[in-house]
Length: 498
Length: 109
Image (cartoon, rainbow over all chains, first blue to last red; front, side):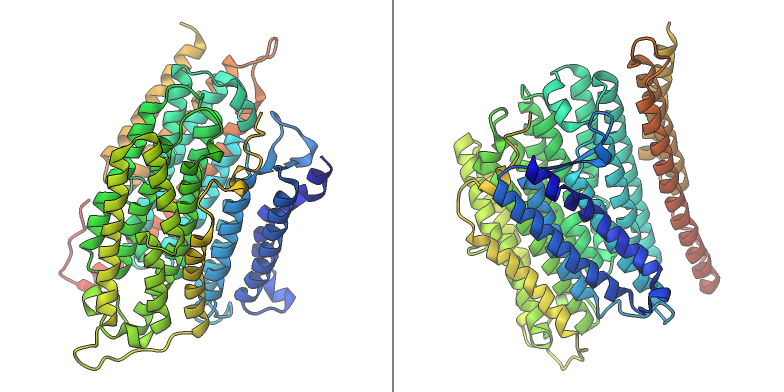
């Protein structure tokens, strides 16, 4: 317990630090700071320090960090808990947000009273709010607390979609909001059912309590269904492509890389920590089948897109599909966190976050340089913004699952898990999905590398933006060097769940 | 028929109406209203849980009531956000129509 007492407050700080940043942005006129980006970069540096400290502590103590808020123990009070999984997710979110902040700095650098200043202020405050909500999702232990975190996430993500204020982006934001709100209402309905039955909402307490009866299954089905709408699993993905394609590039990157992962993370918690460990094979089949359809269908749709950003958005829906294959690849009971299916799924999540963020950022720069994002007219992009096109290609490598990249290791682990559990059709789906991804990435690269038919006019882009996109892509590739076995880090604190 | 059963059934009815409205109506204002109906049903269900899960001798369990209050605040914020977006959209559409002159065809609804 000695360890928990010393590092526990860091968990609170991880959630509160971005909020302090927003408050500092409001107080900027009195602090003598003119640009919100300055404040945000300071907060990002602090966030990196916090995430590093948490990871180091997890690795050293090999057990979860627990902090009881205000000394009020559950079930009445709340507690934060960072196990290996939360730690990895926090570190991933921190790195992606840091790269996006570096990328966005030249784009949203207006002082508050200059033209575009209001937009810049909105972007940075929403980014920080989103970060705080993400950390709350990763650390929260109480189902209602997680509901509030999800709503905070939605309220930060929706305005990001319509940041440029065009009518079609506002429509996309409204559609996203309706899906997200119905999803969270269903989640809350399930929470009410669980509370009515067990009288507690603390995940650790529910873990030992839940029985396999109709009410529990109905509650969890409602909650997972609602979260599926938020995570954009086929066929509830209809809101995602227009919303993610219409947002400004850094906003798209954070939406596709991080925001859809938070509801998936809660589904994982519900599935493995709350659902009683008997007889949910049928539900796993349904989720895996939906994931498989998402991979195949949305990859095909991505292949047919005319606009680069829409193509990347459909690719997000397809890649989310891989995550839902996990449920069939991990046998119920036992310790899921020590299986290769678990490691493969989490690695897919993390490498997709890096690759997709890199891809959206690179696409934003390509569009900025050429003035449009029509795939048919991309010729010349390779010469105008070579670093961005290279980053796009590297990120594509991870999406396709080619070595050496994080996507390759993730898909290899998922394939191994599929062989072990005898689900042959999953092997087929993963292989076909990889080929389709190769097709849509290659289609873009081929156009981008071609020489333009006539001289085109290109605008210069900020160098720091190009390098941060490349950094994220290199991160996705670097994940390809993790060993091909269950990762000890992901299992820290998972087995100790009471 | 006990009180909790009646309230429970009423909650189910509200949730059903809300879900139907959210899926069946294309008009955004109706969807927002349906979401509120759905939310009201969920909050009522929390109230039922408070009655059923009450500790011996107490008239009700205070925890669901605290949850409902928070939930109402969140739902209010969500409604405000949705309506602000709708107003903005309507303003843009009106401006487009006045510029477009004759091209006066409200999309869909």
